[in-house]
Image (tube, rainbow, N blue to C red; front, side):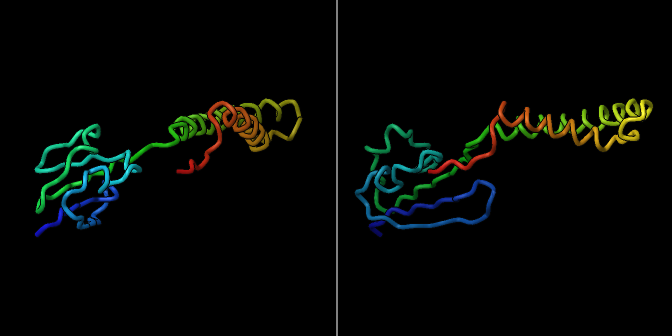
Length: 139
């Protein structure tokens, strides 16, 4: 057997395992490519530092195990989610009180839903520029 076997899991939580064979004599950088910035490679159970990928050549018959790490990409989405949940909770309470207050004054007939929708629109318009809209990052 003159090949190097590469075993990889493309998704860290998935059960799919990929297996590929490469001719011996290639470096890890040649086998894995430059676009694999979010993974680690192990040979014989030991992690090979990325700085050595261009120098390390697995021997014939060796197994290279590749483990992928998820990359966040848009960390602002969690902050935006937390702010929107907080806005919903606040809108529910403030809208109800504003509706009751306006009902006592006769405006809008005490409609908490109208006030809640107004607070929700203004809050969403304030949160989006602060955190940024969701966007897809091209690779």
